[in-house]
Image (cartoon, rainbow, N blue to C red; front, side, top):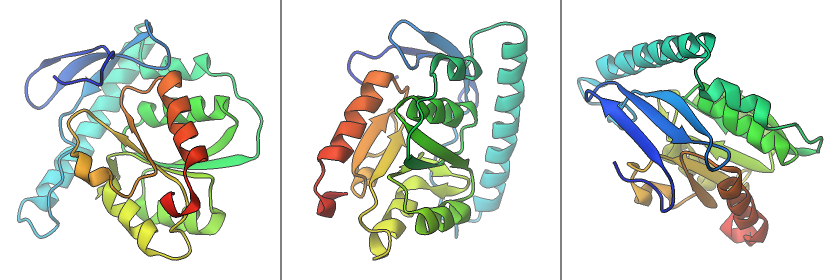
Length: 212
């Protein structure tokens, strides 16, 4: 697999599911996760769209079940990473659109350590509603938010005068298309470290309003 420079990750398994070991939060801290290999965009008018989304929902439930069993057995999973990031009280707001369970909770904990109050949702409609209502300091998008690709939501935010200047942080995997990140203020590759997150936050702080 291809990884960001200097990062370590390892996966094994069939094309549908795999066991992954990745560095999150700090270098040298490795965690187990299930790689579902299903963050592939399929047009809504594709005849297999409904079946594909049904499979993705099934995979997500199975991923949570397996990772919860690992955690109960005492193995290191992303559920453990939340305890590594002490919350720093602050007034900044980040809304996170996700489709990855513990990964989003880990990112929320990491943002909390940087002084952000976070809201997590797997609904694209709710995400857009909250962004328009709260005008957060950052709108954080995963590759998918529920069934909707993150880059599609980013394009929606940019086209709306009410939300066009809200900073967007796009979280991508090494396999995502870079041309899908054009509307993002900053791009952060998984697995996420504190060092990488701080760089992304610096990108947002240094961006001119028209570039956010």
